[in-house]
Length: 202
Image 1 (tube, rainbow, N blue to C red):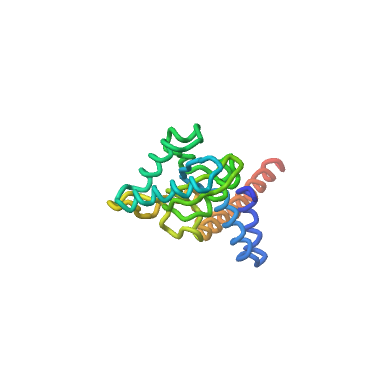
Image 2 (image 1 turned 90 degrees about the vertical axis):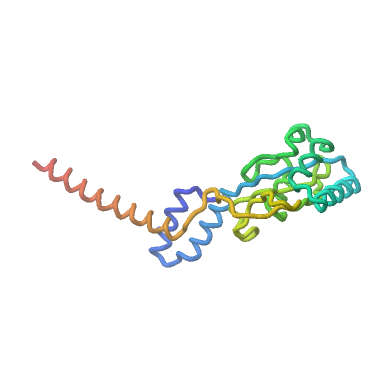
């Protein structure tokens, strides 16, 4: 992944050399990868896929009866999750946490691959089986489109609505701003050099 200053420099160089399209796509993808965030809940169960599937079905049944999916998941996490660091918070892994936040690489990867607003799993890790509910995810436009946050709407499933995209970048505006900045720096640098040369020559 490229640091932000390097990304901006590459954009300007790419614009000047004619490979702007390819570089702009690469910079945008790297920037989005660095700014992906997720709000997710999980339930850790012992190494029994059957237990995980039975609990998943029980939660889905409660949702179909009209209970809000996040509330159902939170209640189940409080009652059944073996992860004592998250169970008391309804299985909340974190709110808008970055990719790489979870201890389990399998769970972390799943947070950025599963469907929003659906009870997913079981996902096997070295800790056991996880059930996962992602209620918000930012900067994954190819996966989620514009509706990236689950909210309650009267039905158990809830509804996906747009949320604020953390670190969203408008690439064209970024290129224009950085180009204007560099032109300003070169002009000011040139004027300053002239002034210093004039002052030192007398």
